[in-house]
Image 1 (cartoon, rainbow, N blue to C red):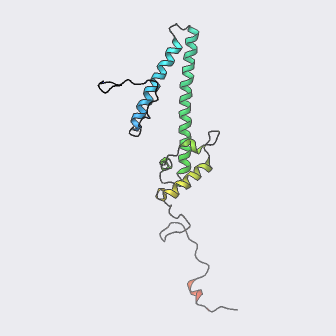
Image 2: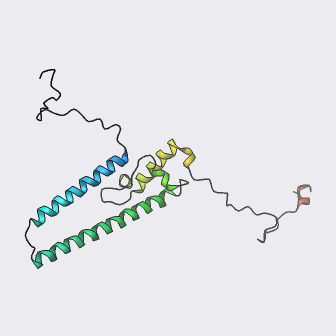
Image 3: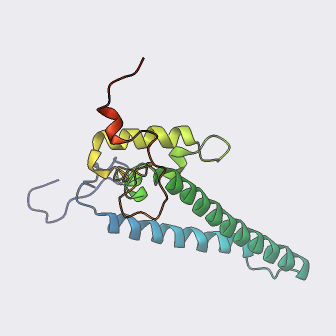
Length: 173
């Protein structure tokens, strides 16, 4: 190229420089993900339809497929909610707020075994780790609920077997 030209020719086959993604926010990522999902859905519909009319049988099967996928998504959401409730129930005994368990990036999937069931040992280990890092997140200690009674209690108390005066009498042989 010469110095007197205003434009440069760009080699389209040359690898591009690495993009600087450090200034992108979570909203930018979310917007990009939504755009990509929309484009993928449109491409899939175009590939499925390909300009020909579907027979009633194909339409019925396609509707059944969509209904089954919707039911699957609904049930997956229900299972996820039940797993989260179980983790919260287990964490409530040791944490003031069971939601604190997930503040450091832990997910419900991390606390489940290979079969998808909540593993109490993993939950207990995660709670112990969280309480080591954040001891102020622990549940408050419950008040003592032992057999102590106040003087104004309606519970009948048995009188002592010995009287106070018996403490001062000489021991007999």
